[in-house]
Every structure is written in structure tokens, then in C-alpha cells.
Image (cartoon, rainbow, N blue to C red; front, side):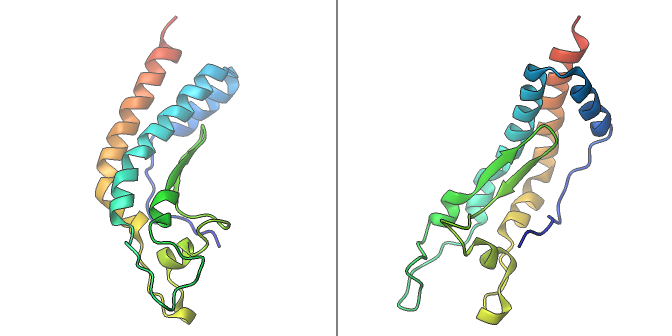
Length: 144
């Protein structure tokens, strides 16, 4: 069950930049924009791992539950349009969504650790993104 994040960063002129990048059809430029997106989002990784719950296994725990797997599953997925921080996967950490969003039927209250990490680091992410995109524009679009 995918849900939209409560935290996003709006960048003025980003759509125009994306349109210009698509029109240029330059693979190196696309790669540079994707890399800027990824590196900007990776600023959140240490904070997200710190905020994630440290689980413990007890007698009632499922055999599939392994403490520490949630921390290891937090990763950045980037494209030329965006970067997303994800936690869990259907095969390896299927309980990640239940921990993050809660599961009322099972008595699991929400622990929105990814949102807290973004709230704490949003200024740093925005500054990093602005600096990296400015570098891409300077290197690829302004040089003749």
C-alpha cells in the first residue's frame, strides 16, 4: 500500500529545467541530474536509520522478523525527476509499512521515522539540492 509523503520540497523552475533536460536528450546531463537528486536525498539516510525503531525479538515474534533488517533496507531511489527514500521490501522486510504507518488490527501504532528524519533535515536537503543542481546547470547548460 503506497502512500504519498507528507514532506516534499518544491523547487521553483524545476519543471522548466526538467523539460529542457528532456529536450536536450543528453545522457551525461540526465545522469548528472539523477546523481544530484540521489546525493541530495542521501543526506537523509543517517538520520532515517537513527530514527528507525530498534526492534527486539520475543517469543511471539514472527520467524520472518529480524531486528536490524529495517535499518539496512532504507535506501534512496533516484531518477531525473525525483528522489525517494524507501524502507522495506515485500520479499525481505514486509513489515516496514506496518511499522511506519501502523496496523490498527494488530495493535501496531504508527512510527513515522522517515517523516521525522525529513522534518529534521529538510533545510539541509534543500540546501544540498540547490547547490548540486546549480553545479549541474553551471557545468552543462551555461558553458559553451
